[in-house]
Amino acid sequence: MKIGIILTTKDYETIWNALRVASEAKNRNHEVKVFLMGEARDLENLTHNKFDVMAQISAFISAGGEFIVRGETPSDTNTKEAEKFLYSAMNKCIDIIEWADKIVSF
Image (cartoon, rainbow, N blue to C red):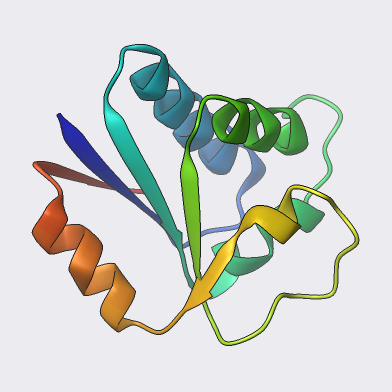
């Protein structure tokens, strides 16, 4: 199945859970693309003692997941994971919606 996940929040627990869903779907051999916009655009800068967002980003990328970020340039970050993000315009979000069998929004 092709799953598109759209993230628009920077709430730690919500993003952490969304990325856990994305990684689990990849582990079950689904194709998954995650589109980040709004507050979620800077998720690689989120740190929290309980909700390790960076670990989930790494797990998703390691599983072959794809991040697309709404915007023309990377946010201010030095993380190696963020270097693997694709930066694109809103039309890429529509492409994912048309491509996916299912869309999940967080």
